[in-house]
Length: 166
Image (tube, rainbow, N blue to C red; front, side, top):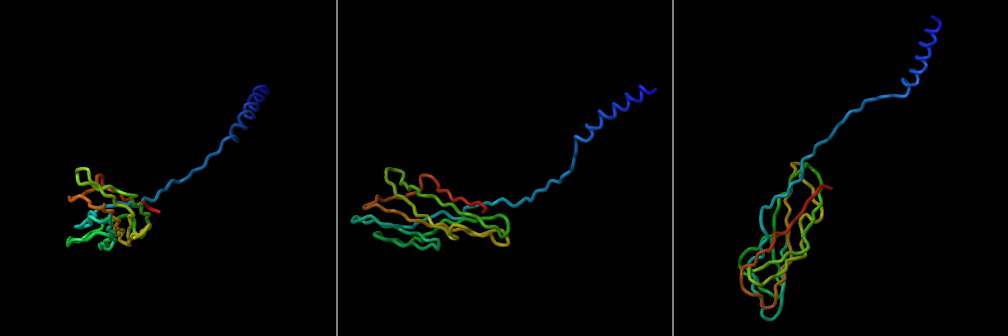
């Protein structure tokens, strides 16, 4: 019996360090889901009717307030319109606006013009309303060449406006 007691005591001593080598705890997991930001096009950009000069190149600056300012060209009676978008997302969140560098307009033949110097309202950063939306307007500058060929010019590829939460 004393031998059996020593074996049992030895087994307890060997098992004891293993019991103190482990520890465990619990944790909770959580997440806050926010509404994704979404940009939807409402209106395409349209510079209206422009009359090119045979004497010099010109520009048309289209503001975000749908007004066009010509230099070296004349404007017709068609009302110009800036591009308009609706931004929707989480209530009262701010977002950054990224505008394109330039876009090429073509008459479908070999004649082109460039649109650049894009502007936006709001400018650079917007804030969604308490209902989670805001209108974003985009204007730009059209460069008309001297004796620019007649025709209807459209962008060779759509231009991209990007919004993302700050």
